[in-house]
Amino acid sequence: MAEVKVVRLPHAADLALPAYGTEGAAGMDVLAAVDEELLLLPGARVAVPTGLMMAVPPGHEMQVRARSGLALKEGLAVLNAPGTIDSDYRGEVKIILANLGSGSFTIPRGMRIAQLVLAPYVRCEWAETDSLDDTARGAGGFGSTGRT
Image (cartoon, rainbow, N blue to C red; front, side):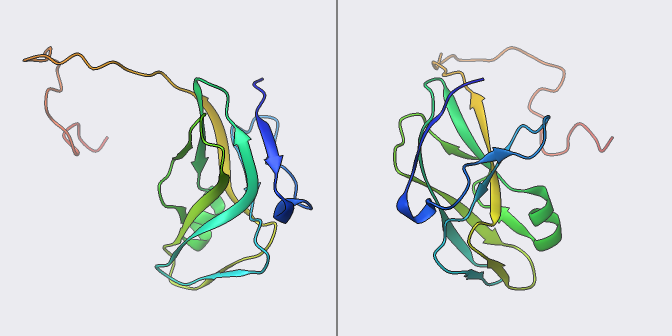
C-alpha cells in the first residue's frame, strides 16, 4: 500500500478524507468541500473544491473518475475523466463536474462527488521512424473490429 501525504484545508476540516467504500474497491470516494450547496443546471460545469492538497508519490498519478451511480441516475460526469493529479502538483484538488442530465442537480457539502484511484504510470521516450510494423488490424479504427 502506497502512502499519500494529504493536507486538509480549513474549509474541509470537518469532512472525512477520501475512503474506500468496500474491501475490493479500487477507488476512494472524495467529498465536496463547498460552503453552501451548489446548483448545477443542465449543461453547466463547475470545479468543485475538495479542501485537500496531496503529494502523490513519484511514478504515480491520482486518477479522478466519475461515480457510476451519479453518472447513470443523474447524468453527472467528471468532464476530463479520467482526470490526472500529477505527482508534482501541490494545489487544492478540484473536481470538474458537468451536468449532462435534463434537470438541475444540487451538490451539498460533504457529498461523494467522484472517485480517486492511485495508479502507477510509465513514461515514454519517442523513437521517430519512417514506418511501423504490420499488424492484423493495421490502421482500422472507430468500429473496424465489429460489434461483437
